[in-house]
Image (cartoon, rainbow, N blue to C red; front, top):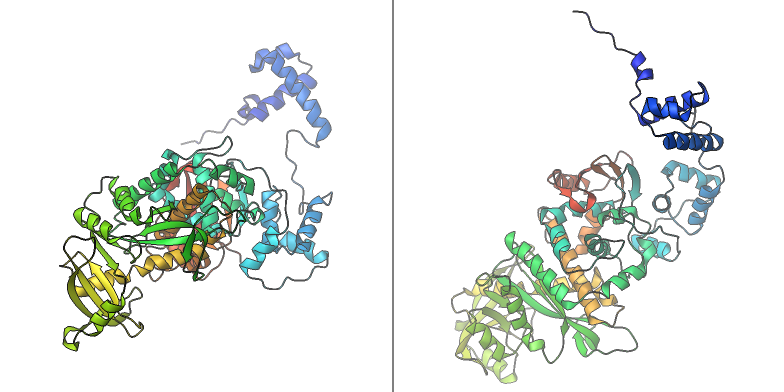
Length: 583
């Protein structure tokens, strides 16, 4: 059977592309001498369109070498004819920017330059190699020199490619989609601005929290990194003034509503057990005009002007489900009842069975109210001299040793004894458990209204309360709660809410990492998030190429589980994670 020959002539007589059609129309005008009316009748253009095409062609012909056909020049493209880009690279190097940092800054300014080209400019300018520096020093260098960052806008999802020092941050985006947190943000009461959507606004705050940014004033540490902007669906993150302005529009009701929605997510995904650990923390305020009360700061071992905050944590998963910075001395004893109302407001009446807290968290009268509500409590009784003497007088036969499992898989042996006693303001008896430990000078006194739980499980439940103290210390160190620059409690309350969300995202991110599920935020950041890479956007795909790192195989295996997840705030683009071929 003979194969039909293609009609090549039709390519010239029946143009399919717009450019080709315009070229043939203009050829008739300039070469064949057709009038605009004749060309319009043959091509389907209007007469005015033909005249516009003629005008535009004349302008383009005078400004460019070739208005229609692209000329392929042999050899490399010149880096910069005017020297502006070269001057920018040299100025950044004078400010001790590394080559990757220079490339990131140029990407933000819309200048595409390879690492090899930057190195060549630096070498020809006579600069020596920079000494090895830690991330803290690099961030201080960048934040100390202001650059003209571009205006923040929604990210353009056309073909694009750029580098980022925090490409690992993009790995958290599928987690947000998997648990539906993007929908919760979109449906929340939080406001949006004229140029930045609601979800981009909230994720801008979360991006800074996940990236270990100390102060919102250090905007040049993030405004030039387009990878951080991509996380929030923006070209780059906003400047400092925007963050301050946005947080001023937040109310406590918005934060509570958002936390309730998040709590539903944690409960629906079985991330909340029957126990909640509660604890206070003092968030210091360093301003001159302090309208705050003095609260005890365990971090500094003294009382200081601060904002009193409370946190609630699930001991099984480490998820934080509640936070409040509006606690004052006159209402702090009732915080445990407020948390109970918060928890049950989502219809979870029977899920919560145990509340674990410190001795000074509430009063014995409120313990009576918890008992009436059917809630089991585990706390510590304050030691008096006479009660300690009573414990020391107990005969040795009444004591027994138990083994308590610790979080790291190790075990700990303690000596315990139990009795039943009454306490002031509480109806009926309370179970008392005395704990002797070689690391304690005085015995600890646990009290609970649960008379059926085995001793070993009871002691282990309370020992896990120290986890929330660890989380609070982590929030002060990594999420920088002690660097509060605002005297407005609600702004700090919003900051704490964003900290809770960022903390939980870290927990969910490493939940399935063997050996890393109980790591602190700083460890997760160092091993997984602080990973440079190259990000390519094309068609309906965002490709993240991560640089060589010890934990890269773990990251790629984790991200492979999310290959079919699309992020709504990126136009439902698919995401692909791979290893970069260069280091």
